[in-house]
Image 1 (tube, protein in one colour):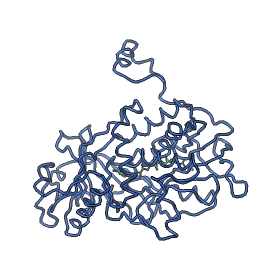
Image 2 (cartoon, protein in one colour):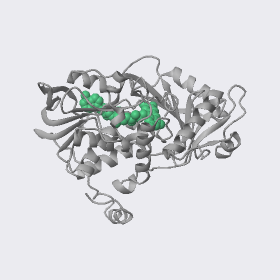
Image 3 (cartoon, protein in one colour):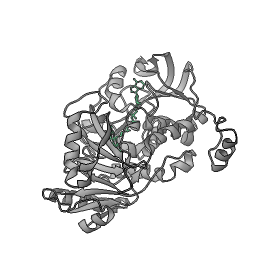
Image 4 (spheres, helix red, strand yellow):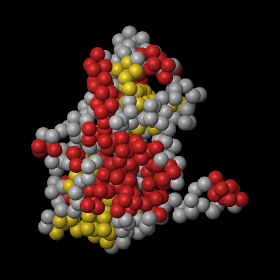
Length: 415
Ligand SMILES: Cc1cc2nc3c(=O)[nH]c(=O)nc-3n(C[C@H](O)[C@H](O)[C@H](O)COP(=O)(O)OP(=O)(O)OC[C@H]3O[C@@H](n4cnc5c(N)ncnc54)[C@H](O)[C@@H]3O)c2cc1C
């Protein structure tokens, strides 16, 4: 693979940029792989990448029914932070956040990581208590966050109205090294690196069945034929339940559409990310100038990837009191993604009842920020057959044992 650099751009300019090679190959599937990963979203591709990088396992196929990054990875509002409450969450999200810091250099692909800072607004007394508790927990976990006053919130984000009549801003939880990255570039960067290691990324290929011999997996059925494997990683977010069903077990996961929208582009007016969980909306400004607005989940389980009109109204109405300037903007487009929600709002990175099958799901409304850490932990689980320190608390057995990783304050349907 040729490296991307300023010199390469200059060289390519001489031939009118006709000489660039494809970022990843599109091969036909081989008969057998050591590991098959189902799902070429960020988590699946990161898993494949760290299998190669950390464990030297490169006879790997990543199988995707659509196009890579076309699931939630390419549909999210790109918020990255690690200020979670529980120790296992803080550990994996902080690992991910720290990997994001140098991911562009590592992958030689500009993922546009922008650590512009994230404020989670406290607009009720219970949020003050919740976020102050999280700030104390973060101090013990070594995650850098701080509780800030309303005046500091206003200083960081001048377009905000902190004196709203119903929900005044009472303070905030601030993570200065949180921020955003370009979501599809994360998928593309990992895909390019995987392809360069000799892995096969097979798009437009749906897994339709999981083949077993007794209790052990031996391969998958796909729309491009049967493919054998020794180990199978299911990393399909909102379709985790469907894949588990094919393998013959159940997951404690529900699938729901989560929506987002963007406004017309405007001049730069906001250089932090703001999450307002009480009124339920979150906001940042993209490099193109659009205000990126995240809303809530639908009130019922479904598999749609569409937006709906009442969500625009609900979300924008909620945010207008805190951001009055939004009322003068036109909304440009909206969309939805199928998120996979667990009861404790934490992910599952786990062995399963089927030998050789591993599952990574349950990232729900907030898994973009976790991609590098999740891939790291899932690769270790698949390579060693047992979870390492990052993944061990995220086993699906925790629901039987009642050992929940309760993140309903830090995550809920926030990001
Ligand atoms: C509107 C919205 C906003 C969000 N905002 C944020 C945010 O600000 N910050 C944050 O951290 N997170 C956010 N998230 C959550 C985040 O996007 C997800 O947690 C994360 O992208 C999940 O990545 P993934 O790789 O697990 O899943 P996906 O990217 O969905 O990838 C799974 C892939 O599996 C494929 N697949 C499914 N079934 C099959 C099959 N049978 N055969 C082959 N392939 C299959 C799908 O086509 C898909 O490409 C948001 C999500 C949405 C929808």
